Length: 205
Image (cartoon, rainbow, N blue to C red; front, side):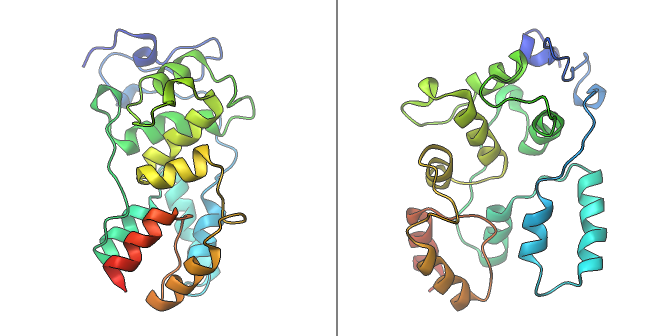
């Protein structure tokens, strides 16, 4: 595998990291990981079923391996639904490979979503996300879209939280989501869009 573009070499003024010839195994991230944004989500998902000390032990393993938590993918595997989506990324990289590349960048206190490093911008600009206005979106929203794609969320869910800014606090279908969670005995690990909720109800209820 040869790398010829700036993105492929993963170089920037910030020296966030770099890919040396030979592949991802030679990636050298120089920004120390300081926070783990998945912690609260994991603790919430399993708070009623797994002792907290077991959760903490599992989180240490997850964080140590840069695990990419994909709640929609896990939901589909459990219930046989079609809520998630496997996206394609530049250089035929997989979601977990991209996650390992960008996680140290996202967690750096120097990272600015509005003005990310050069190589990060190139990655965002090369994403094949089918929103008609994607090229004109600010890098802040493109970054959120990238994270959504890595997480295996479908198009509607990504547009909902990345572009329309729908969250668990302001979603107009909060009550419906809670009712479906109760009916299936399972808590969603992400905020479903209206089309996805409709799909879940059709496939499970």
